[in-house]
Every structure is written in C-alpha cells, then in structure tokens.
Image (tube, rainbow, N blue to C red; front, side, top):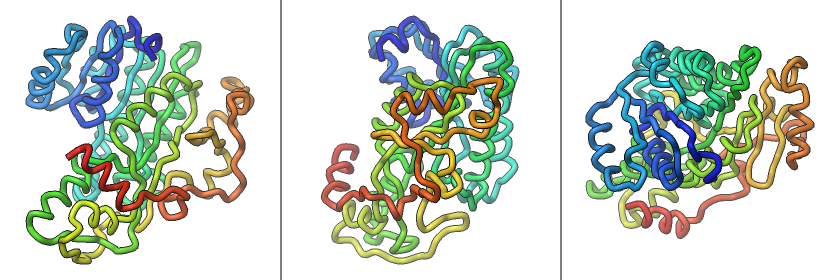
Length: 338
C-alpha cells in the first residue's frame, strides 16, 4: 500500500463525508505528494482541516471548495492528479425521490464531469463508489447510480491512447456512516420506540474501515472496466434493532417509497459476466467483453488472477447471503463505533 500512494497526488470528491475522511486518514499514514479534499461544504472542510491538523503529513492536504456539477472547477482541481476516488453523491433515497433532477445533476451529470476532467488532466486511475441500490434499481437514487456506473465503465472506451483506467466499487450499507440507520436507531432508543419498515427486511453491512480497505485494494489491482463487489455479511433489520435497543418496543411502520425488502449486489443477469475471488466478485462491463480493440484479454487477466466464472443464474443478494451477522456480532460492532 505504501508504494501505491508514495509521491502520488490523490483527489477525493465528497472528501468531507464519512468515507472521504476515513480514506484520508489511511492515505496520510503513507507519503503522498498531495491529498485533495474536493467538496462543496465549507464548514465541513473547516472542521476537517482542524481535526487533521496534528497529522504528520498534514501539509500535503489541500481543501478545494467545489461541486461535481461544475466541470470547470473539477478540471482545475485535477491538474497534476494521479488517482481520483469519486465519492460525492446525493444518496438519501426519499430526498432523491422528491428532488429527482437534483439527484440526476449530481449523480449522473457530475459523474460525466469527473470522467471528462480526469481524461483531460492525465489522471492514471479513477474509482467511482457505487451502491447495492444500483443493482436492478427501483428508486431514483439507484437508477442514477446505475447510470453513473455505466458511464465510468464505458469511459474506458473513449480513453484513446491515454493510459487512464476507470473502475467501480459497489457495496452495501456502511455502518454508522452519515445518514445510516444505526445512529437513527440509537436516537430512537431514547424515545422508547424503534420504527421498523418491514420485519423481513435484510441489508448488506460493511464497516467504514472495511469499505476503505476494499477501495484501496481495488485501486491497486484494477485493470480498468471492472465493477468490484466485496463479500460482506447481511443482517436482519429487526436483529439490528434488538442489538441496539434490546428492551425497546419495535413498531412496524411500512416500507418507504423506493425501498426494497432485500438488497441486491449481483443480479441473475450480471452472473453472465461475473467472476468470483476469495473475498470479492468482479463483474466485467460490456466494454470489457465486447470491445476487442482495448482490454481484449481482460477475461484472461482476471482468470490468471484467480477469478472463477460464476454459474449462469447466480445471484448475490442480502436474503440469500450465506453469511448473516448474529445479534451478538452486531452488538460487538455497534459497541466499537458508538
């Protein structure tokens, strides 16, 4: 990992968010040339700058106010950048449902702005963060992220002679991230009642540390055109509520618009181009499979790395997952982050 970031310039869009801050802490353990925090919230940048002021490599941090909707500002920020991690997004499902074009502007048009700025700036690698809601989406947030995924993966097709690589990382709910259900349940515990949307509901679960580690791993091994999916556990929402508030009443309130009972990360159709590794899956984009002029050996490369083709009809969703967290395991995780 040290060699990956040594003397490199890294830019994180949405860099003041939960992922961005944890990613920054990991990068600063090494010797980057610059670490650029690109976000639109000046207060969060001010707070992050103060919080990180005691880090050994603090002087390599740069704070850029900007919005991914603004291509001119993005292009200026990407001058001299080697790696881009695209974490900026409008991600709250109900808010995206009520403000659809705002989500499109950030999650779709913003994605294309990142791609074009990276292509024009000599960037080496770009990883875009995605979500399980982008697999067979039923809400606008998931639909915009699916569109974003397609844009990033297909960007490999327009790179010409440039050596830039684009890949996507898709994972599930990040425990205790901003807007997640864990802090909400903790607050509701004080009110004496935990609202449950559906007693059968399940979700994938990943800690912020696991998410950051997986993204760094993908940044290191990516060849361009892959969608990476980590093998992570599922949990039942009712078990999560019991772990956080064992003596608190649960009330079934019904699912919200755009919610699924179970989340998916690999659909049955995806199985046609999915390869399994020990701790993750790789979905090869249509670009990788059908474009012989570039990455024509992508399948061979992936199999040489140890990937095994998944069977036709394979699905990876939070219901059929073989690894579920017990209430005791959930309690242990929550105790670490409260």
